[in-house]
Length: 226
Ligand SMILES: Nc1ncnc2c1ncn2[C@@H]1O[C@H](COP(=O)(O)OP(=O)(O)OP(=O)(O)O)[C@@H](O)[C@H]1O
Ligand SMILES: [Mg+2]
Image (cartoon, rainbow, N blue to C red; front, side, top):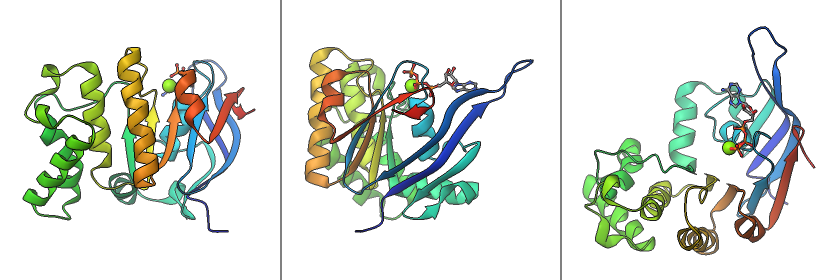
């Protein structure tokens, strides 16, 4: 069997609190994620779902334990190596799209490509147009985020997450801010990305329909998967 894409080894995360014991959020999580899988993570509010994604995406470091990406230990990498990891290997979709307000849809999608600087600007632009097509928003490419609906903004964020052809996409409550019709558009897109692009998906959600779409559904409770 091939090596897993991710391996979490005895992951702990605590937060310091003034005058009180540390808040222990994760208490020893171990997990292997195979390439091309579709995982969903559910659990009540405050159970640590976003914390797990933040550690896997290397936005934050565990208090104890390790995150391995393709057997390379993220926990021991420096900031520069972690920036490269985030830009090259992963895409992240947030509950609130986090698009840059002063840029158009097209420019927002182009940004990860421009940061990575692997192609010419016109190639990056062409790819961004293709991605806006994929999410059904070619006609909104010159709109700024404030000139788009919430669902459209989230689809631009999905297109942006695909710019550098990541092996994995993390989505943290991607439909948390959307009505049911727009949520459905987002599920359909995520399913298509998984099926057609073979991208590994790791999705945190409160939405039962979306949680049911994953091949593996994990529930977190008391700092552990249950
Ligand atoms: N930077 C921080 N400092 C202190 N406590 C934090 C910090 N970030 C998160 N927490 C606490 O850690 C716990 C887990 O947070 P997390 O955001 O992972 O929960 P969640 O499962 O994603 O919840 P939700 O479903 O509401 O998004 C919460 O109780 C939260 O208050
Ligand atoms: Mg959360």
